[in-house]
Amino acid sequence: MSVILDTSILIGLQRGDRVVKMEIESLSRHFPATPSITFLNVFEYLIGIRMLTKRRPQAIKLLENFDVINTTAKTAEVMASLRSKYDKLGVVVSLSDLLIAGLAIENDMLLVTSDKDFEVIKELRIKLVT
Picture 1 (cartoon, rainbow, N blue to C red):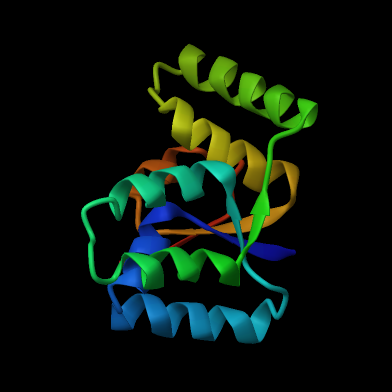
Picture 2: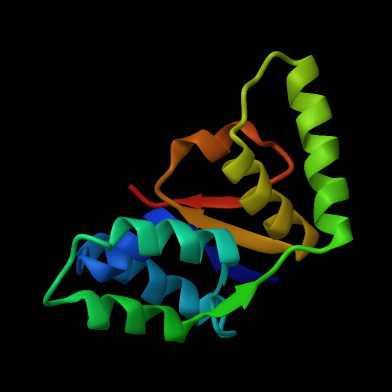
């Protein structure tokens, strides 16, 4: 199993958050493979840093440290299954969270996030960084 980082973690790394950095360092001892991010995390991160001026090149360079995972037909199947299940339970899961969770589940990855919204997806293995 390997690790997939959520946008909240990318932002924490970009901001130099000590807790996030220590958590990633700790996880790298257990999961030595290069961490991954999804194409959606790249999009969300780029939207989030658009206001940076002087540090923007450094912020963009951070993305080079990660493998980017893209969707497949299997991702759509996993997402549809999750949407169906959680809709029946009356639990609202955003499309972006479904996509990230679907990719993490499809690729058997631990999702590292600061976003508690992912906790409702029981099929997902998460490491919540607070």
